[in-house]
Image (cartoon, rainbow, N blue to C red; front, side, top):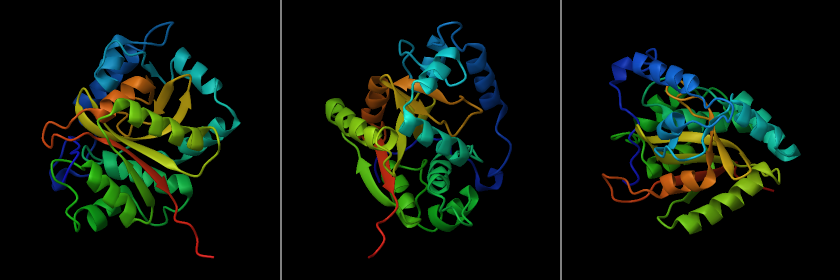
Length: 250
């Protein structure tokens, strides 16, 4: 029981309800303050990563599109797969199941799974939901649906940055078959989302809650700092998961 995510936990009866108006207003606000010609916005940066000084750019902004255009062949291929795989969370508490379900779709092994089936058949029976989906519970969820999971979590920013850079090079530059899911802190609390690209020291977060904030690029250093922040409940850092399909038996 560590690394608790503070994604808002809703009553089960409200699962699948339409996103709340507050999230819709946040998304509209983010679009409206998208940064003008530069593509960077202090307001978006505060919402995305809790740091108004960070050079955060919405994906749809000119800067966001410039970064997409700078991706290499492997990066473009991975980005295209993530566009097909991503799905918005279907409830306020579903950032973790939405991230894991997107990874299943990325690998083409989603079968009959859905976000609600992950919740009903894995999260609830295994007691993985407490005040949200913790870092360790997110790893348990991914393992339960068949992924080979590596947990990356530490308070040392330099060490976590080294690990993340290595994994992103594998995923986005070398064409490796892996997915990276981050459990980080932003202004509204803890959150889960997949990473979809890396370019010019910026990481593309495919936000599972577009009603609050559309997909956006954040500086690697800002993301690492957020991943390493200690959870106020557990006193331990969050982190990210590296997911692969298990090696087939020969």
